[in-house]
Length: 420
Ligand code: HEM
Image (cartoon, rainbow, N blue to C red):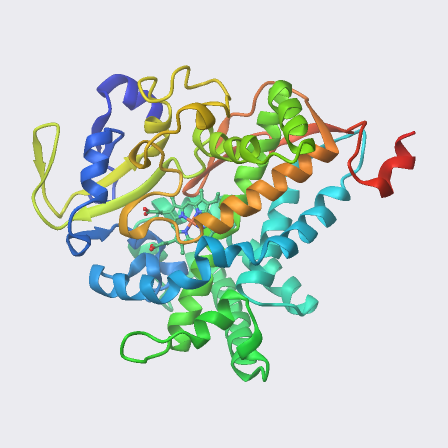
């Protein structure tokens, strides 16, 4: 629908969905720059539809001044350099998953990637090392994040999504959310009581120790909402990008071959460019930001007010041939030769609410694509996947189904005899 409207109306149009404010959708680079710059206190999120799951204390839900203070508090654990400390452990988790794939079979990469990214979040972000709690959290979270509930939660009128005693329609979904809450509070309490808390490096431990300018720590209710936000924002998104990577590599063997060659020479620039190109050509969150601008705001000569939401059409931006020649070609080289500026590349949104986990996501993707490309030759089993909506993300309709065969010249000595 977005692509059709873009073709019909150009880079900017207004959508009227029942139960939503009028929404101006734009891929106009100049309008986007204006949305993301200026006084951060004059730009408000438009994340209300997410409130039933992530709660009102989540970073995504805070009003501008509170949001700025909270970002300051939470930035440290997600900083690029800090995140590099997780690289070894993520590499181990990736190797265990990707190394266990069955050779010479057709398999769907997206579900395997979901298990992997959930394990990363549970261990490195929530600090859950107990296998039983990991399994209970994983199954409860998965029971909430189904494609159907994800889609419904975006378009249901607010009064249906609200929890009340008489609202039987959503009672079952709410009971799952309460189960998730109990498990998260169990983990918060255990982490608080951990005598080794000071030496732990998972995000929850760092958040428990963090203090704002007035020396105040996050409350349990705030921590609950942040942890659910991190689970929701960080797991499915990254898994989806890995699923798309499999489909793209299978259909572009030249890219896969160059990846293997450059990695064998110890060069990582082409790998990093491939990660960026995956996130461009298959923008995981095609509407990558929504804001209410609390001051008169101009787009294309039209003045809009705070009662209107502005939605950033990152998919449209990423397929603009003026910014990306031959936009439908999967060509990581474009990020080596002539990288785009920040307002032309927005897989992680931008401005004050830009994705907090971007550095962690890029690291996970880098290590996952490296592990896949150096171990497996992927072959397509049908036409390139088409995007289907899973809540706010677009995922491959074939679930990243590819045929996998071992790469002949494996870098790992232990695996070499099996290839002879
Ligand atoms: C490929 C993977 C990912 C993609 C495509 C992605 C994309 C996004 C987008 C589009 C936003 C909204 C930005 C805006 O409104 O301007 C966002 C926000 C956010 N993301 Fe990510 N994300 C990814 C991975 C992660 C990870 C791994 C984490 C953490 C574990 C994470 C945590 C967050 C948080 C906390 C926010 C809210 C930031 C705020 O409101 O200030 N994301 N992400």
